[in-house]
Structure formats: structure tokens, C-alpha cells
Figure 1 (tube, rainbow, N blue to C red):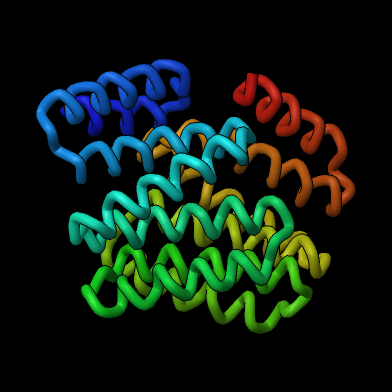
Figure 2 (cartoon, rainbow, N blue to C red; figure 1 turned 30 degrees about the vertical axis):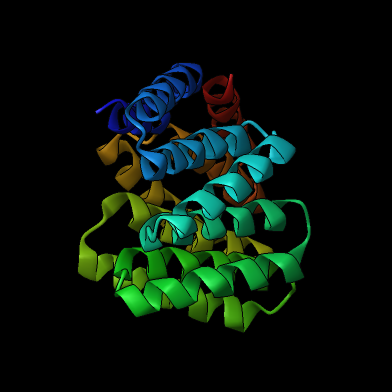
Length: 230
């Protein structure tokens, strides 16, 4: 229950409280001798650290979590730890490492039939392809991810897919298309109460509106993003 609460607190942007509750959950899991749950707690703490930009801390936690979860046969946890390691690597510009880590996670998720996890991996592979300038490959990854997420009815994840497709459109100066995608992403993020993605949506809308020459509107969304990040 504590670990689930930490996830909700993270979703709404109460990161310090989420971190404290995740540490409480970890202490209780250790007290009970539940090593796999300790690993899941480390994954949660690592994700909060990643969002704060504390990449070294996140990597150390994820490596420890992966070892623990693999040792106890928790495929879902091991796949999640590898996935987040890949995301940290991508954010640090280590794209080859990211692709390798995503590939290892993908093998587990395909074997276990984890459709939601596979959709998330396709999304992240699309982000990496965009970083590499492989725009058509990126679009294909994002569209495949969106199809899976739509089938699953996961509104928060669908919002992420719209965001990624919008970012790709901005990079190719298709600002009207990007504006529509970011608007839909913001609507869905608001529906599920995802404060992190709402802040990102404001920033992205600012980028699209700036490209359209609507500078006052862009300024408004940048200010909203800044307020949310603070």
C-alpha cells in the first residue's frame, strides 16, 4: 500500500513526499524479509531520482534492483529496472547503451506478454530514433506504441505517445500538427491528474506556438510550465 501511495504522489508531482513514502515502504519490506519488494521499492526511488536529474543515484539503485529482482525470478520487476536504466542512459546521451538495455527489457516483456511494458519500450525506442535523426523510424515506433496503448485504454500512456509524436512534428516544423497533438496530450494528462506530463505539455505547446509565431500564447505556456516545475 505504501508503494502504491508513493506512485500516486509521484503522479501528482509531490516528489519529496513520494520519495519519503517509498523509503518507508522499503524499510517495511526489509523488515518483512521480502527481497523482491525491496527491489521494487528501489525501482520507485530510482524513478524519482531520475526525474530530479540525479542520474548516478538512479543508475546505482536500478542496478541493485535488477540484480535483486532477477535473483528472485521477478520478470516484471527486472524488465522495469532494465527499461529505466535505458531511459537514464538515453538522457545522458549514451544512445547505444540505451538501445541495448531497452532490447534486454523487450525480450522479457515479449516473453511474458507484457503489452503495456512493450508499448512503453516502443515509445522510448522512438525517442532514441528521434535523437539519432531517424525520423521515419521514430514515427513508426510511436505509432505502434500508440496503437497498443489505445487497445489497452491507458489514457496516461496515450498522452505520452501524443507528446512524442508532437515533439517529432516540431522537429520537422509541422507546427499545426504538433499543436493539435500537444493539446490532446494536455487534455489526457489533466484527465488522469499527471502533473509531470501537464508541465511538459505546457512547455511543448509553447514550442509549437512559438513556431506558429504566436509569441504571447507561447510565453503564457512557458510560464505555466515553469510554475509547475517549481
